[in-house]
Image (cartoon, rainbow, N blue to C red):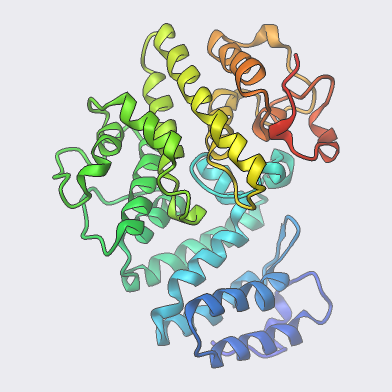
Length: 362
């Protein structure tokens, strides 16, 4: 549908003259014929400010979806980048619905009071789900489809597809790891591992809940074999560590403690590398420890005051002890669960320059 200034009148944005800007942006996007990466940057530059401001989503997302629907139907080269763009727009909601193994790159902005969706925002997310479902058949990357099936639709196909490259495999494994967490169903049991590659055998076994080599997964964590791949591609090291953690939840207290200790110890050199090299992207140790913090302290998520350490269970106390004495750092997820450095409360987050270098003090 080609919108006019008048038809845009029923939608909202944060700028008074947004309708004129939207018309200009939609015309520019419709005329664009460059590569997909440039298209994604154009979306961030021209469209993002009109549909989202800080943590607020606007109903202008609806005509944006209509405009981009027409574009990807004419040229599906831009479909994957369009879906990824809307993952960026709905980043907080997607994190809140999935909890682990998803963006953002910066966990500083995960304060529950900032990411809690309104009824109107849930309706906008529903429109995104409809957009993705409609255009999903046009997507050729099996790993990409698996990832967004889980993130947006909370489902995944239980067949092993053909993969075009290793990046697609990593995204598919990432999606299946998330699916394992979100459901009791064995998504890829009884499947032939050969289409995936023997180098990922133990990762697949862990997803399936079958016997796997703990040492292999710890080595994947230590080496972070996908460190040169963007966040959305998945970090096998962090995925491997999280699979170890999820498996340990069903084991004895002694084995749970051992697995947590192994994981935290393997995170130390990753933290050191991140601090020394000043990397812009989230380091694997941050990715992993934020997810583990989220899972361990889910019942305290959104606390506004400090939580009493004496009220925690043994596994929670073990993790805090490891963070305090071994990793010597903190996570934002712990802070948002009411466990701050010293006397610091969640509302004091602006005073923390780098929480991963701040010792955890009880």
